[in-house]
Length: 353
Image (tube, rainbow, N blue to C red):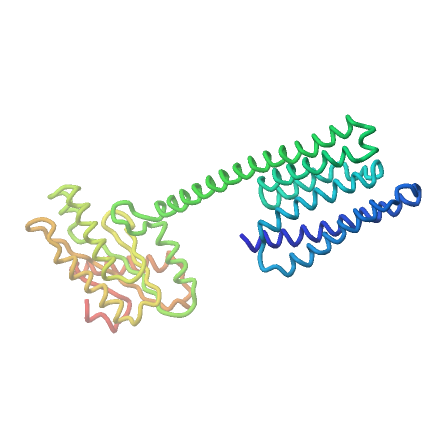
């Protein structure tokens, strides 16, 4: 933030120097038509403001960081120099009419409303004696009074609007942040099964698409169905059935280093990217199957798991529907072969079934 404010200070210094140069060009043209405008005070006022503007360009470039003291000093000198120009040029200084107000508004926009109020106060202190000292402005007292009031009130009004806009912007950003958090939470809920905390069908489909869409490495897609779950659910009730599913999900998280989803009921699907060798994959699922068979949810209850593991190289030209269908067929093959076992498409691991 300090670096950003220092950048603003340097750009303001360059703008100030440009403003003085443009005003000098205007006065050079004015002198051609009114020689009386060229007086010692006008030259001194311009020389002072030009020296200040050039000096601030150098100082701001060499300074390591912004300084509140330097800013406060600058806004006072800005207002003093412009008031001095009012005195020196009289009616020829008409283009300067709203410059004090614009300078205060600029301070407010760059550094905050507090600096707009400070600059307006400095302008008021400098303009009142300037109007009193200028022969021209004494001849038009109502215009002088209006000038003082406008140069004091306009920055305050602009600062108030700026402050309100800052508050509105903060509220909008906070609301946007809340909406983003809510969206992320909703995205998580859309992709998660509420009972087990695993992914749901939608969430795992994205993982499978990503796994088989990335070239290089082994990909394992597996389907698992709990043997005897319907009988268990009917005998012990849905609450016990939900507890069984939750316990199975805990075992899945412990044994399987990959994405897992509850596809519905007692069916689970897995997607493992670069899981190691074929043997490593089947060993992990064998440990999972063994622990599921040892679960003791209710006395005398027996539950097993039939698992079909389909292993492919990610470079193979297959889509999600094909790998899911093949894993599902292997799972049903495990059921037909006697349930509570693993079937894979890799002959080297069939002995572990």
